[in-house]
Figure 1 (cartoon, rainbow, N blue to C red):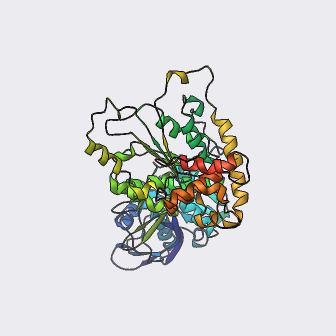
Figure 2 (figure 1 turned 90 degrees about the horizontal axis):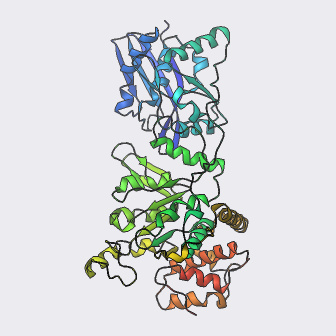
Figure 3 (figure 1 turned 30 degrees about the vertical axis):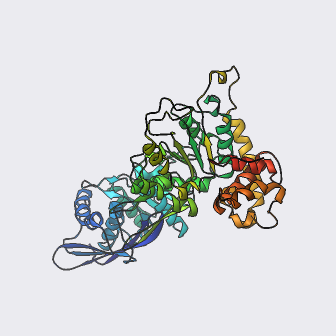
Amino acid sequence: MTLGLGRTRSVALTGLDGTLVDVEAHIAQGLPAFIVGGLPDTACSQAGDRIRAAAAQTGTPVPPHRVTVNLSPASIPKRGSGFDLAIAVAVLSAAGVVSAAVAGPVVHLGELALDGRLRGVRGVLPAVLEAARHGVRHVVVPLENVAEAQLVEAVTVHGAGTLGDVVRWYREAATAGVALPVAAPARPADVVAAGGVDLADVVGQPEARVALELAASGGHHLLMAGPPGVGKTMLAERLVTILPPLERDEALEVHAVRSLVAPVGEVAALDLTPPFVAPHHSTSSAALVGGGSGVVLPGAVSRAHRGVLFLDEAPEFKGAVLQGLRQPLESGEVVIARARQVVRYPARFLLVLAANPCPCGMAFGKGLECRCSSRELRAYAARLSGPLMDRVDLQVQVPPVRRAAFSDEAGEASAAVAARVLAARAVQQERWAGGGWALNGLVPGYVLRRAPYRLPREATGVIDRALDTGRLTLRGYDRVLRVAWSAADLGGRTVPSRDDVALGLSLRRGEQAAA
């Protein structure tokens, strides 16, 4: 064996942001040692023991000398066992087993078992996306991660089952000029999952249906309040059936988040259906918004990116957990600061809240069956604070369903509503293209209050009075305007009418439009 310097590549992730890492290995005469530098965590720094055992099983043992591995840039933290394969290739390159010229430009991802097998790791999709952005054209991944890596079309994926496979490929490439074998296509075509649910399944609730359509068309957050069993959860679950399918770039972004938290191998096909995430009301702030004591992982708000985040029994969530939603609702991302790093995750989701009228759920109509005290009622209502609710455009009451709603004529199907939503979104994209906004719900309020989008006083009179009397905040005023534009887009009108503005105001809790 020739002892010297070896080099290859891998990727370090900080959230979804990646850094291309040069994995350098040097073997020198001296007492046996295996040192990994460059801010490795515990799992990464223990790679030496796994690599020595795996290389020995492969028949290419690591020389019994001093092995020094540097993960550059050394200032970026390196986490997890996904660097095992890259370190092993760099070390064997330094030992003269693998051709440095062939292995150097290739990105390697994967964990090594002691018997030399390659095990899949999380985060392969964002890592390969980052490699592609840096011009890398070849990646070697475990067989479990092949389908996930192949979602990136600009990169040639090589799937390996063992370290021995990789060593053999590089030896053949160096001696016979044989190219690395390309993994067979392992992923199905991009799909839009049907889901098996339809808006036609919901009985009655015309006002909630209107709110749902407005929410889908303009990206407006929604609160549905009503007694148990009236269809709030059914309506929320069917919201994704009227949202437009994701574009491919959007779906890659969504699946990149899933890749960090889903079981290895689960991210295989590109599902163009917007995600639907419904955490339990006992969830913690870290689980909802993101965080963790070691690795900062994405929370439910990021897993719902480009889709729907549904909080059933919203008042049962802890107050601090709900307040954590305020930043992502405004900025569309989550920023989590740690001592050594700042992690950002995307979080542009559609928030849907469902709430009962009281803790026992019976304070509707005359409320004769409600057993809650006045103190309990006030405390329950106060859990959904003003600052959070001020960011929710649509706040509707969902009443109990009466027998008259059971008719032979089914409610409108998701496909018909989705067609109107798609047409309304096309109008919005054309209107706001110059400002960089895709939906009415994202347009800053000052834009809607200035020419050429300022509405005449005849149209805004009802919300002007509500603002003057303090029944509407300035943020609420702007949100009513956004809903009015969405109502106009759904109705095929180029400018919102007085009725559109009144509808936007009426769909806010306690703010009924005056004549």
